[in-house]
Amino acid sequence: MHISDILSDNECVFSFEFFPPKSEAASEALFKSIEELEPYRPGYVSVTYGAGGTTRDMTHDLVVRIKTTTELDPTPHLTCVCHSEEEINDILQRYAEAGVSNILALGGDPPRQMENYDRNSDAFQHASDLVAFIKRFNASSTHPDPRGFGIGVAGFPEGHPGTPNRIKEMDYLKEKVDAGADYICTQLFFDNRDFYDFRERCRLAGIHIPIVAGIMPVSSINSMQRMADLAAGARFPAKLLKALGRAEGDKAVERVGIHYATEQCSDLLDNGVEGIHFYTLNKSSATREIYANLGLGSSVAPAST
Image: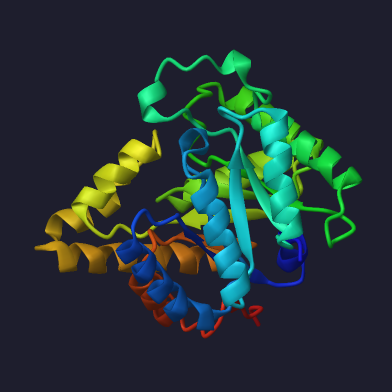
């Protein structure tokens, strides 16, 4: 089922993100987390794709394993960097044969060891080019769904790190939507005002597809530092930093992070968010506690009365 259909059929849909494990022990830990999260019936789950396609096979294998051994609906990430049209076509064909329903199409980054990589040799210079290619694939493929893949793209409430000009940033997002994107999933953010402003600017730009909010609870000071590195430009509000500064020890920091993310989610629900996507870091505890704090038993939030 296309994610856009799931979002349109429900008041608000919760979903989870996982990344491919790099060892047998990490794989066992991930599937323990998946086992604990599956009863919450997420609308879908997504699986990340390493920079430059470095986890190409691991992403595929994890997606297929989730699809064949669980009731979850996996959505693989797919990026432009370091790929030819033939490679992308082959990847899409494998996912179509596996019955995967959706793709999250991203620009992506080159691997860290390829800092000076020349993007001119890539078949797809921008995520909008990848979206358009997937749409063409849909028109000619033998996908089980006659419509082919549903297509998601990324949005950046705090601004895209590669596009300081916020007006052009919205133009580029509109290009992805016009190329055929069905929904937007945002980068993580910690101030809901950034999300609401982003959502309003999307509407002003003529972007009317569903927008899913990306939430990542802070679990430790070290993880916050990694977030700042990976999500370039991530802004940590003073309110959050003060709360973390009062916490004594990693468990207290984790409690603060869960409390703060719960407040974010509650406010988002009160303000009509269409979906909330949890960046789980392959763990289940924080997500499960946020569900408990919100009083939710499943991943479809009931309509407000």
